[in-house]
Image (cartoon, rainbow, N blue to C red; front, side, top):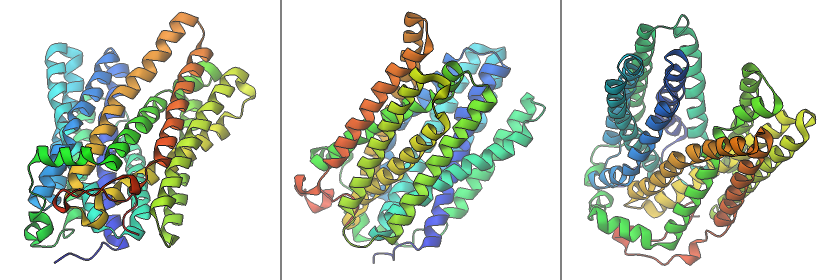
Length: 444
């Protein structure tokens, strides 16, 4: 028997898992990066390489997703993934300290730790999105995507508040205790959040039994679907632009607008405020939406991408005009467009994976998650690397940032075009047991 769709409380409970993932991921990608570079004097390429390695490991997401399909239950992958992520975070904190004293051993431990982090995020994140896709009613998927990502930001905020206190008077011992505390609380939160989310016997349901096709056969069937293939390309292009942009805003504010670290951090907060507002607006509109959802979701996704591209073009104008440019307003608009794009894309992803109770929602989520991970692994390095090369060549910062922002804007505009062209009519149906072409946004 098919379980009833999740209510709002159930969606919020599962959103706690995303908050937990966000808190641990912030520890491993932000705090430990800063600690290695600033407190321990490690070359920046080492933490950057470790973070990139975690994204490479996440290319295993399709396998995690297919495993959760074949097993009929997502909860073991969510809880198990969070356990692996928590262990990886603790070991990563130890590696950060060890690298400063014994670089070779520290890097080896770091590689092992970030392998665990990538595997944990891949298993837990893919399992969570697949569970939300199949257990959320189509009319609630837009709001569910917004709730989930808002709670991830809440996890970042809570993490920042906790570590801001616990890491005062920095020491290796405080770092280890903080990492252990954050990882432990996140793991327990995930266990409590998924408790009861999947009714007993669901693994023996016909839907679960239908999902046990061989992994290679499932992936080939997904890739033969033009809609799924087009969505994979859209995810890669849009996330490539997004990830490259993320690492450049604060350096841009400092080098071009001559802002202090505190001022650039405040501007980053303004951008995140716009991001949050965009998510909230989209979620509220999605919750009130009636009627066909696929075209509506697709239009919002495309609009968010175009808006993000225009926001980056605005930063290009700001680079040429200097301090007279309203940088804070520009960044707020960019953040708002980013928020709309992010949650509408996730809502579309959930709809495409969960439409008609797809037996292979996990594998589809895994393919798209792997595309996102690859984009993030490339985007940060390429964006920052291009800026450095152009700065060294041109001897000035503004034109270097203008060139890279122009490239990122072009990628966002291309992603908007790809999103607008994702129509279910172009996708022929595959056999039912392989979850053929399904409309964006779910059944209407």
